[in-house]
Amino acid sequence: MSEKGYVDSFVAFIDVLGFKEFVKNNTFDSVISLFDNIKICLKIIPTLGNDIIDEQILKTVTYNIISDSIVISVPKTTKYSLEVLLYVVNLVVFDILHNYNLTCRGAIAEGDFYSEKDVAFGPALIDAYLLERDVAE
Image (cartoon, rainbow, N blue to C red; front, side, top):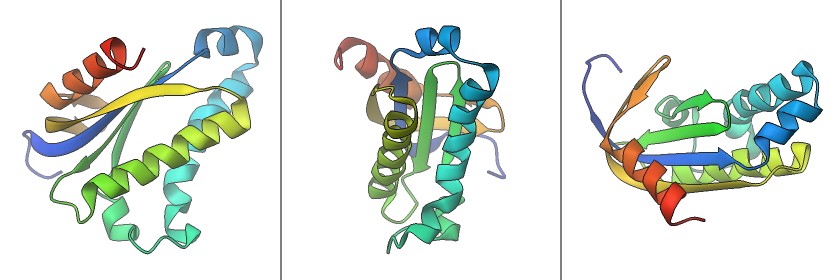
């Protein structure tokens, strides 16, 4: 993002369930590999034979991770933005289930969002978080 400001986006807030126990019962390398795999998932998407997501579209996807929370967003100006977000979320959640036997719960909201490097905030993130917390139980 070159200009600072909110971007109208689809935002997914994902909670990795059982993460605290996973951290307590596994080595540092096992835990960090979960996060490394998320990065790998995003890098390999163009090689999976998907007709929608190419390198250019993938550059618009942002993700932020803190502890057991993953935030993934796609600007609504991106072609097939919601489909791209759903594809990425599905891939990440499946990878976490398949490789770490952890389930996830989350929600998606749309609206204003800002993400650059290690900073992420906005009404859409708050909406997705509240949906995950209050509705997805």
